[in-house]
Image (cartoon, rainbow, N blue to C red; front, top):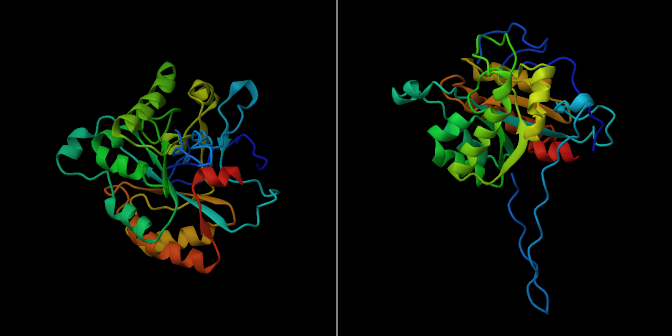
Length: 288
């Protein structure tokens, strides 16, 4: 596994740029499937337990580890793979907006990823899974996808963080677990022990609070800029300009906040494939 360090500075989430724990930005927002039993002349053998998704060991002082991308000196750093990740954002108090017709899902994006045969990781909030359980179950049952944790409420785990309400420190672990419970209740199967901080904002206290949840925090090295974007070509160009072998791209699966993502994907995928890139899930990126 590549040498990975605990990040000292955060790469800002949900459409921002690199910076400190809560920098300014432009407006923007588990188990694997069981293995099949093998057959022998003497009769069927029990199925082997599925391999657990790779995680990183806790850092100094029990801090939750943070993964951004493979280290440059990795033996596989020259392999042309890229992980596209999509944040399915919905806060705990946005139910009334959903009831009035605001769409926090993006089924057309998921359909396009399937049509283009793209493996991807969806960082989903528990509230999103509760609002769209059929979609959560469908995404979480598709071997091309895996669902990772984006918190239950999409409230900040460090403050300030773009005006997001803040999860109290003692409640952080419970918030993460509540999201995992929502995925389970929706019937999602391909759920992995990775976590993305809302807004990309965290500090050492948040990392310590997440330790008991047994997750690896996953950031990124390429910001798509799709949040509240109007021009799909501009989003595509930002991704295409930023991707390097082993890159991890942050995008969104929230139609109201990222309306041109699906259009951008229709350009990004064929152009990266023409450059020789292969699309992988975060779990594969971490295992290489």
